[in-house]
Image (cartoon, rainbow over all chains, first blue to last red; front, top):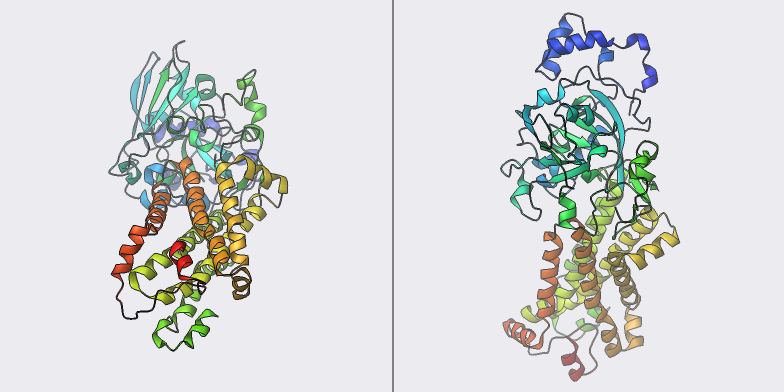
Length: 325
Length: 237
């Protein structure tokens, strides 16, 4: 696998902010996808450095433009595009890891709108473009740790959630943020069975939601998010087990009380509200001490908060993490 | 082999078709071949270790249940030679259990004994799986003709009733694991099959099954190994 590391780019190659801001205005409403980019490409305005840095020859889908790197990215070896898009837990499309890829073709990620509601001054329903376009797209290469003891390294593309939430002016009563996935049994065969109380719901404490690592994600490997990975818009919270990173989000609500979360409803003893990656607190049915990185045979040690302890440990100071698992 | 011995009894039609045993042997190796070729050709998906664990576990369970199917099927069809396929099915079940456990011990636990011990003691579904493996060891070890003779038919049969326990253990192991996914469909299918196979052994049900069989030969259905006394035979299954 050929991975371009950030060192490959000189500062002079990076499009100055003023220029890409201008292009963004020009392309408003297109989310910077390839069609608009072709228009500009002909005018010779595009430089390759305006693209996301992670590439994979197998990557498909429309390219996202004007994506910048982030210092919050890890430089670990990336999991291949193929593996990221064929090994998924997305029960809306079936419970086998291969089901989401197989059964998500009929899913229509556009048009898409997201409702913002609850304890905030400016609630509203926004088109996806209007949610994302006011912000700078960033590539964030994060470790993803599944509660099932496997992990990946994924080059997501998205915008930090915090500034998006600020636009709706959360009030002092907004202690939590509740997220809801789309409910479309006709396009999501897994939702035709009621073993889970659809739609999928998740939640974060407001300080977790506002944390700079928390990403509202619209792409991976520099391209639009494939259906099986939570198209068109999902959450990525890299220090928590993967199921906290809710997919295909249609509703974001500020709440005063801790919102219900799907896996906690299903099985409270095994899945808590916090679900921070923690090698010291085992899942009742398996150890969380180690994980298998997809693409590798032997297991490796799982890190506290999935290796993001320096950034997030302060959020949980004084909390008994065995109790608030 | 029991088969050869019985052929001298003069009833030509009591043996399985000649091709059946080799065909069954080859068929039982197909999942292993799939895993071996897949492993070498990078064809086992994003998480090959998980694929090996799942496929070997699934086939161990299926083959275990097949061994439990032999007796009811023999009763219902009157084909006594079916019993002579059971040893091979049982040994293949054990083979896949060994592949399953070895994969876990080697690639999940990294041959870390403390890790395995903690898993077996702390996690009920692994406890059940491990006990099931332990129950199958004496069955595999006493599967030879020599061991059957040494133990004697009655004791051998009593020991091999552990197969019910192993079948139930394997189903429970799978059910308990799947519980975390909230999706119990697949393990419940195996559970239902297990229940049917156990119900088929209730005396009343077994007798009814026996009446289904076409009675071409008057000879009593023979179990494998040759039973020592008719009384014991009736008590057995």
